[in-house]
Image 1 (cartoon, helix red, strand yellow):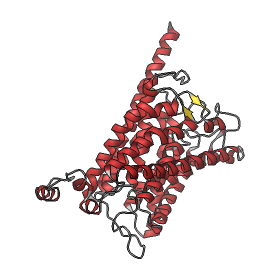
Image 2 (cartoon, one colour):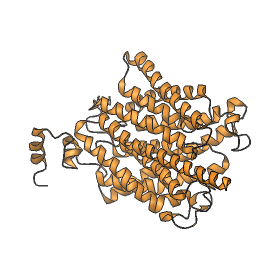
Image 3 (tube, one colour):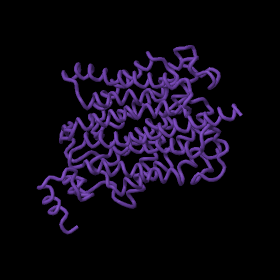
Length: 434
């Protein structure tokens, strides 16, 4: 009887833990909304909010109907799942201490985060209808298949030995390279680049708002990483939380110092993104690397984010919130870092030889990490490009010039973000006859 009581207590605690951490991850959508709304111009703040609602609503429904089955359903050849549509069919292979419904909720929070990465890269010029269609494709196909390869029972990259604890590759590199493809496909904002190719500064509308968004994301990341244990009694929860905190702090602190050296002033948007870069970088190895390695990973990701942001602008690629530099690059570095810094004592139980190069593990794990990263990144970039190519056959991908100049809030949604008295007259005039 006592054993039965303990088993029931364990299931109850794990269920509460997973539901609460899933809620923390879902709260990150508020962080994305505030961060992106603060980074874009005032005339496009409502459009950011509307895209976040698309992420949550369409993303959850499509993942329920299709995505979860393709990602975690009964394996077919290591590449795709075949059961679990609308949570039905055979899911007996998912052998956890929580119900399948609870597991779905946690994974649903992840898929919503993936599409939100792409949202920022196409801010201020993507057509709302096109974004809805892309959200369906990302949450129903692109992300679920990549996730199956690494995380599902029978997934071929997982069987090969790839380690991605909470998604530096599956979520952030995939989302970041998808964001890069979308930004290139849709083109830069009007006026972002001068005739000589130099980037014009497009000032953020509200940096305090963006910083609050970053703090909410930071808070949610503890659910993102620690919650991936899927168990309230897992002894690594504390270590995961510490490495998460240290990497984020190192990313932000390094950006403060680096931008002071490079620009002679600490650059607020870069510092905000530097902390986020540290969070992204540690996500793959948060359970498997030391505190010192976490600090190094965060610092390297922070500097890389600044340099890649500059490089994209030199190539006239417009990414208003730095989605690729934060998620694509930091996710890639974090994935590879596992192959360097994974400690033997922290990877016990996941396979022979699954530890980093710097701890005597040889090149095996690093090679597997590099292979998986390359395939997931190319998959995200190529499928996103193909998705927008197909969407363009159905509906315009980019808003009209007039809608972009007016702002998507009024031009697409018919309402400004801040309803001052004179705004009502402007809205009535600009939307007359529509």
